[in-house]
Length: 520
Figure 1 (cartoon, rainbow, N blue to C red):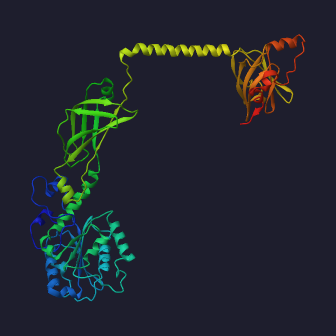
Figure 2 (figure 1 turned 90 degrees about the vertical axis):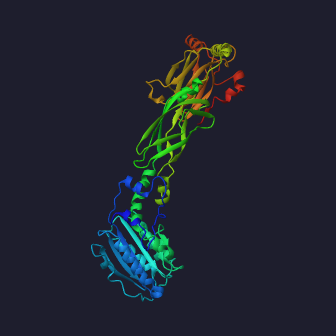
Figure 3 (figure 1 turned 30 degrees about the horizontal axis):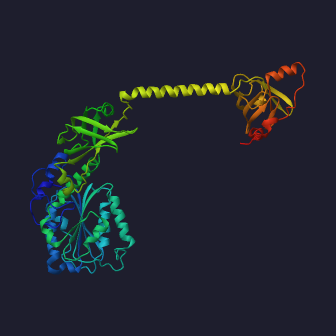
């Protein structure tokens, strides 16, 4: 394909461009500037042309006009461009496929002299055009051109109804082409009402060209292909956010309650597109206010450029445990009109990058410090008093807990202190899994020792108050409490009172029922 800028001169033509109307003269950047900045050069392309040769094309000299305009189109192509020329009516007929070379007239040599077909199978024509583009040697850039003056008229064809599954299959084939090719498509209507627009069912990006527009936009086909190159090159580039790096401690500004100097670094991710930021504003969570003083009205970023902006931050309010602030801005570019208008791209850059704001420590006015000290001293005294009372109320432990299984003695646990955690003696494997606690109790009655136990053994637990000489069942185990005094009396041979279970006041207390094992 020859240098595409040559085709901007007004010449008679057949087609309009696919992506946008021709660029009008305007100040600033135009398509030529963008193409030049991207370093794009013309490259060979494939042109697939589908010409209606049904009998109606003979009326009013339409077919002769098409032949003349096609000759002009071919002459504008590069010698390396390839053309696939097909005609369609009741069926599709290939007329030429090959590079233009030095003899452009050969491309059209096999066109029929007259259009004499009976029907107009537009679907079959589009299918044949897609087949040409699906060839393994198809170039990356391609144009598909459909020219007709009639309605879909294809009796017996699988494309006879535009709602058929065959048309859906055409759309799927076209979508698959988009993975490796940039295709500009044109639906040229030589009459006011035709079905050329059915091409848009298959290639949604297709541009519909009316008969009145044909002569004015012929030269734009080549430039459209270059625009497709440019759009593809810039699409992924524009999806990246502009980075903002914050330097400075906003948490310190909140804690001190005074302005703090910070630095903002803006980094452009765009290798080609220049941008300008204005209306910079802080985005903070509810309850936190951040004001930046000293920001410029505009920040300009050249391609792959960065800019450092000093500012003064004032932070007030309340910051949560993970509070962050960001920045918003209006982003414009001298390329914006070309990007959105000529290339059909979306230009809506965002800013990315936040700064953490640590919560400020709680500080008290000096006048409140004496009162706080008094309250703290009172709380400390209350804690000490509580611990002292607990020690005095809880009697000291003495004696043994004797553990038996079905009358067989397993172990004696010596009690000491006021509270103990229980654990199985290391030497008694049968008691593995024994645990719980024991504490002195004043519930034994006048002159009698007692302990409060909370015991676990495997899946069984038991709790209650044991008087001197009484026991509690813990699954297969019996746990008996014997006080130190009782042990001395036993040694000198004095008889025990009946200690088979709780007696006296304890027998009628809630603790009496709690001597039974408690299932988990």
